[in-house]
Image 1: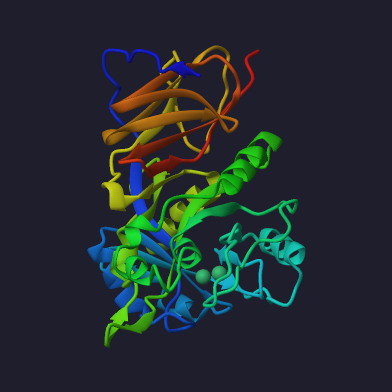
Image 2: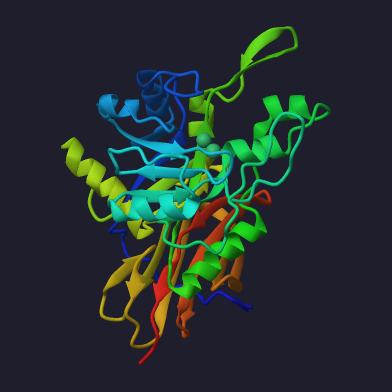
Length: 357
Ligand SMILES: [Zn+2]
Ligand SMILES: [Zn+2]
């Protein structure tokens, strides 16, 4: 572990466009309580530019896909057998949930869709839920992994004694991906699979009875203001919906995602980039053709504790800074984490630095 390098005089101006959105959303088409237009309005209020609806084995939301007052609404679905839930986007055909996971992972890829392993590491069973784990961590061929899911963390930490903390102070319940999930993701990058890491809402806006009245546990807007996927785009979202949808799915496929828990601060302005001496610039999901040392820059909109990882191992750290510069002399899969008040705030996808020739 080294301290990060001293920063050069100034970071060059940004060239990428961050585009915040949320995926893994349930509506009245399955077990959510909001209709698609309500959910889109909540997304708008939460400052999102895109959402992906994923009802359980149901694509009816597709009829309502399109722009909703500046929010691009896409429809996918969640393949929902007893376990091994799988989020599918970019496919206008339902793959049956009766198939074994290896089959639906293969079919989604073969038909050109994107597939994300949902809440892979749910563990705790309480009397209110069963764990919906991903069983086969040796399976390959998916687009990405939902590293961090608002609802499963909340459910895992639920107990009758803690329920009011859970209901009313959920920010202290949702902490971050499990170490096993992160280790799996880093290992897959090293193996060359490079799945995209995303955060998911898994929001249903469920209603519960407590303290003598009915509460909406996690209204959509509340959850939309927490776990957010910022797409890193080369140009702003196109006005044409089909073009915008292609940009959104393309970024998700390419690992062009910076994840944030906005409970701990807005993350707009976050950057994670590789700079080459000839001026070329790369960002998350990109492969950097390194012929020599590569300058890596992580920058957050506020001061934070920043850690840089290579292949899952910490290689640099700064405390209470907005930026971390690091000269990568070794190839590897680099990602950054920023924490505020000890809580995970920002988590980037990997930048893949190639072997020095
Ligand atoms: Zn699920
Ligand atoms: Zn779900």
